[in-house]
Image 1 (cartoon, one colour):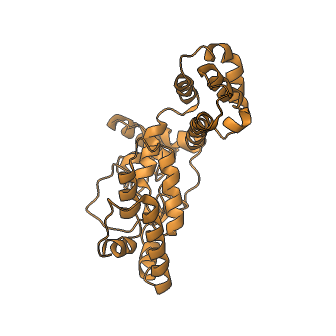
Image 2: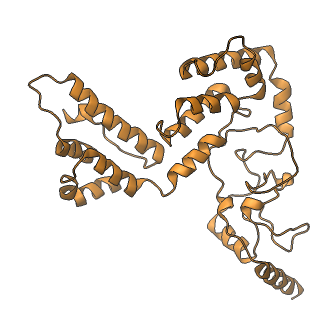
Image 3: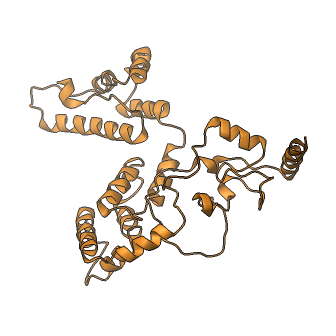
Length: 299
């Protein structure tokens, strides 16, 4: 009976996977309640908690359950166990990061089906109770390929508020395939390839590992463009205020304030850039790093 009500969770321990599994647990309880016969026992709170805990098969989660099983079975509700699972295994700030991923997700040069799938995954990381169906539809439409957006809004009697989400996905996918077949996406794709590399494009710079991060921090340099105060054209900044480096395909940081510029995003943005977590440096620290580097070069 247990395996029919709750499926096993084998990992990975990610917000998306955990959200999906916890939702499946709730669905399983609801299905059992609505389909059981009169002779079948109800699922009381300890039974729901027991079913959930014994199906945590991921090793670290199984160990956590086994160590605290007696206390968990005394909880007043299944929601209390769900809250403890989230508190223990969801990364801190995951909801804000998931929201950022959702609202930065755009089609760029991806196919529409890939874009819709990426957006769905980003929403699942937050949950439908946070992002309403209307917001979901607006994001899907207005972050799609610019020409596709124009094609959709030009449809007579198109009403985004009344159309269902699945119908909107089907309509946009059909229109995208039509545009591709007509060759009307080619010009914009060429423009996108000629523009600076987007955040989600493969970076030309090497991966920012701990050693490189420590080197840049010691020199009061930038985690994003990897430049330091002694490099030509340096202006004091950190990752989130980075002006970017077009030569190396580095986009400006999120808080950089350039002149107004219009360009076509060329990728699906899903994850926050770790370089934007870099702390600020003081003016005296920049000066100290500059003179230290100058002394080193003169030796």
